[in-house]
Image 1 (tube, rainbow, N blue to C red):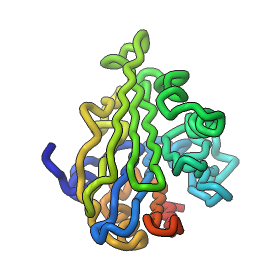
Image 2 (cartoon, rainbow, N blue to C red; image 1 turned 180 degrees about the horizontal axis):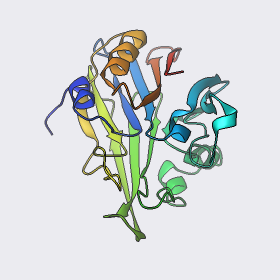
Image 3 (cartoon, rainbow, N blue to C red; image 1 turned 90 degrees about the vertical axis):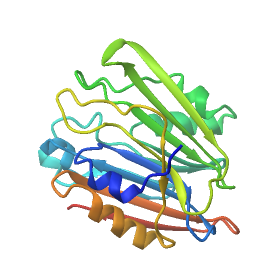
Length: 234
């Protein structure tokens, strides 16, 4: 698979929706996890990322403007013994519960489906970054916009080469209904050795009107220590 430049992909797509990147820093010292959210409606844009004991959660920036919290407030990132869970919805908690019970990432997601936001039926995207830098990704989506069938895709990767990762996002671009992501997670460059630099580069590349929040974590592959960066529009 051809490797693409992450920042070029983001600059060329004004609305990739929500995105997950898992990979390794160019110096090979850190596993990297990145998650961002975008929004077109006031309800979707009215969010910030806030840190929690085991990761982050979304929170309304202005609680008075929330019209439907069901698909916008959740824990995108949570740490468990088996690694770091990153998702675009409340399936984070489903995966966490299954892993803590000795079950699997795939088993958890087989109990879930795409989001019920007709007519888009937004895909559920999920990742699990293991302590050794290997990872899994998944996307659950409708069949060409038909909610009668859920397609479940799972991908397993050994620790990637330094300076690259896999990128999965919800939408191919704008539209009504929004077109779901197609194909395998994209092999991309991971262009920075520092989480702050990567966060700044990605935040600048995301569409200024639609970007909402961004999270980056670098995990030292020697001792497991973490460095986190959050960027919020508000």
